[in-house]
Amino acid sequence: MSKQNVLRVIGLILTILLLAVTVWIGLRSHYESEQYAAANRLKTAGKIAGLLAGVLVMTQFALSARIKWIDTAFGVGRLMKCHVWCGKCALLLAALHPILLRMTGFYGEAMFPWRSWSEILGMVVLVVLCVVVLTSVWRATLKLPFDRWKKIHRLTFAVAVLVFIHALARGTDFYTGWPRWFWIAAGAVYAGTFLWVKVGRPVLARRKA
Image (cartoon, rainbow, N blue to C red; front, side, top):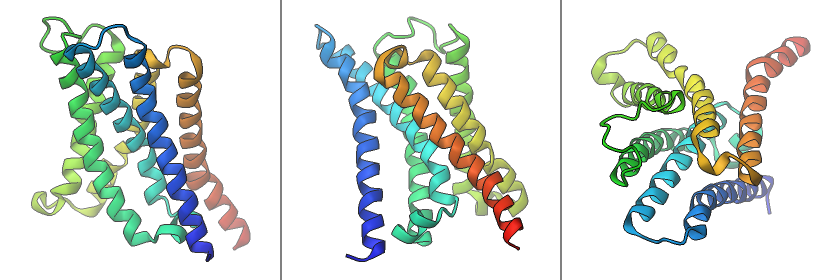
C-alpha cells in the first residue's frame, strides 16, 4: 500500500470516529431517558444537528490549511470541494439546531431564545456563519473583491471559538463526564492546529530560508 493510501485510510478512520463519537454524545441522553416521545426524539435530533455543525465548523480549518499529510492523502482539489460542502452542511445543521429544539417546546413560548448569554451567543454564531457561507456561495453574484471576501471568510475562526464556548456553556451533554473532555480536547486540537499553521509554520519557514 502506498504512503498516500495509508494516510487516506488513517484520515478516513479518524473522520468516521469523530462523527460517530459526536452522534453518540447526542444519542446517549436519549437512550438514558425513560421517555421516548416525539418531542424527545426531536430534541435529540436538534442536539445532534448542533453537535455536527460545531464539529464541521472546527474541522473546516484543517481542510483548507495546507497541512501536508492531509493534502498528500486526499489532494488539495478534493479537500477544497469537501471544504465547500462541509460549510454548506454546517450552516444547514446549525439552522436546524434551534428549529428542532423549538419544536419540542424547549424554548417555551418565546419566538427567540434570549434566556441566557450562551443562547444569545448561539444566535450570533448562526448569523455570522450564514454571512460567511452565503458570501462564499454567492461571491460572484455579489461581485465581492477577493480581499473583502477573505476578510469576511476569516470570521470562521471567530465562529469556531464561539461555537466551542456556546456548546461548553449551554450543551447539557458537556456539563460532566467524558463528553466534556472530548469537547475540550477538540477545542485544544483546533487551537493547536491554528497556532501551528498561523505562527509556528511561518516562523520555521523563515528560519530555513
